[in-house]
Length: 346
Image (tube, rainbow, N blue to C red; front, side, top):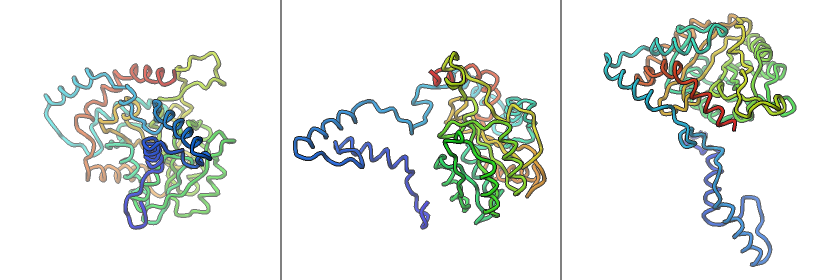
């Protein structure tokens, strides 16, 4: 948003619109100078038009459906029919218990997450908004990765929160540096939350359990809550240099704290995820926040969960039929997830 609160264009959206406009006009690419002479200019224009008419692999558009990935419709149709034949809509502020039980079972014993630690939302974006609103006062700051996803900055601004950035360096594998984060938190006493993405968008870097523990210890010393965005958690692959003989689509266990022994040392951890990416169901609109205990800080896990549940009760955004679908997605959909991961790897 600009200072007068009018919408501003996403930089990627603006770049795509410029590409399409120049392709339609046959203009040279931004930053390129027209060739000298009329014949050279005509040749350059012709070559550019030819390039622009080739099929475009759109790395900005992340729509699973447009890429051909659709969750089996027979399961969705069956569950919706069951929902419609049931008692009807009975809202639960934190979300349908059977859905939260399925999510808790997905994390397993290693994450120390129970159904009572989970609040359902309509999307990961809503999860961020609710968290920013509960953790921050106007003028507080949240720490965001750079490079990162532009949405986070906009969500912070909508909550009247200052986005501050920590930098991911290629020589460090695009991973957050605990020492650099500590220096930044010391310089920003009004920082209230640290956003981590693992696997990261856009770098793909995955945070291992040891680094996560170090980051939580740093955040705990500065009373900062750690928000871990795991929406790409199921899309982790063996890199060729790590396993030259492995099939390109063969997934390895994510080096994520989700599957490691839980720890209450350091800051409280809030996991954000949803069914949009995992099951190629962006239209079903179900996300969740799973809160893990940490050292005493600005508020306890119980207090944060109560605040999030109250906020969710105000909006009741999560769809009733979609919540009913969640247990079937986890019970019957993991084979689909494996097939989708293999095709993406290929």
